[in-house]
Amino acid sequence: MIRSIARLLSISASTVLVRIRKIAAKIEQPTIVKGKEFEVDELRTYIKKKDKPIWIVLALERSSKKIVTFTIGSRTNKTLNTVIKTIELAKPKKIFTDKLKNYRYLINNKIHNTKQYGTNHVERANLDLRKNLKRLNRKTICFSKSITVLTAILKIYFWY
Image (cartoon, rainbow, N blue to C red):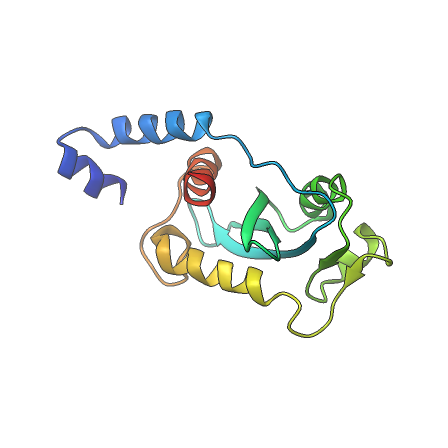
C-alpha cells in the first residue's frame, strides 16, 4: 500500500510514511461516553516476522459500533488491562468479552459478561480490519515493519 501510494504521488515511500505519522499524530482518541456497553476483543498479527506475533486489543462501544480505544502489544494482562482501564473510566454498564481467562481477573464480575454472541460487533470490526487493511490479512506478503506505523495506520482507519 505504501509503495502504491508513493508511485501514484511520485514521491518516495519514506515520505509517505512520514506523512502518515504526521496525520496520525494530529488525530486524538475520541471521548468515551459514560454509562454505555462495550465489547473487547483481540486480533493477532505480526511485526516483521510471522514467528513474532503481536496483538491488537480493541474496545468497541455497542450502540454506535465505533472503536473507542485500542492498544498493541503481547497477549498479556498488561496489554489487555490498558484497554480495560480506559473503558472502566467511563463507568460502563457492561463489558462483553470472549471467554479468555485473563478477562476474569481484570474486569469486575458485576459488569463483565461472556454470553454467547456478546462480541458480535467487535468480531465484525476485526473482520473488516482484516478485509480493508492488507497488512492485517492472514495470508499475505504485506506486513508492518514497526509498531509505530501500525498504530498510526490504525488511528487513521478508526478515527479519521
